[in-house]
Image (cartoon, rainbow, N blue to C red):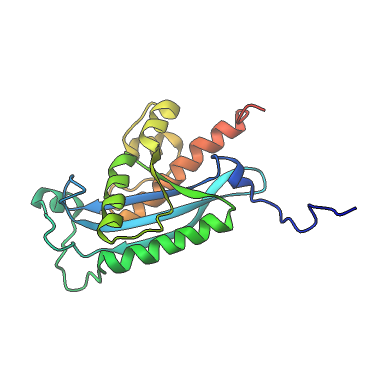
Length: 213
């Protein structure tokens, strides 16, 4: 009798948690609010993994400074808010055409490592970040996009449910997560804090009994 399971490798438990989707926390800093016309200036992405107890935790983080695409709008109010000088000589920014193939390849690698089918974007007010990511991918004419085309996990909504807060700083404070307003509005800092917040909410739910059997 042939054992059909002999060559099968164990499936990563995270692949069973979100319908085969790998949560990838993303934050962007931009030159305005319109993803079609305004520049994307910074992007950071953190992948999530699961430990042996079924708890989520931050895994790998990728960060990039991005050159404004040709003809991009730069709203002075947005630049004042983020503190980003897109033309600073030591900013070490790369064009979208370089950033996104590298970033998406790294994400696809993590999707595969976790036996997932695709990535799902997690963000604080996630549709804002999702819009800028999708617009940049379209500008770069990238065909292999690992992200779900429209579904997201929004930590502003989840935090409103779990903690009664929708502002990232206040939600982190309520969740017992250290947050520095001086470091906020950096894509990599906000991404890591959003990732901590997302993991905290999902893990608390898990500790309360998790998914129904």
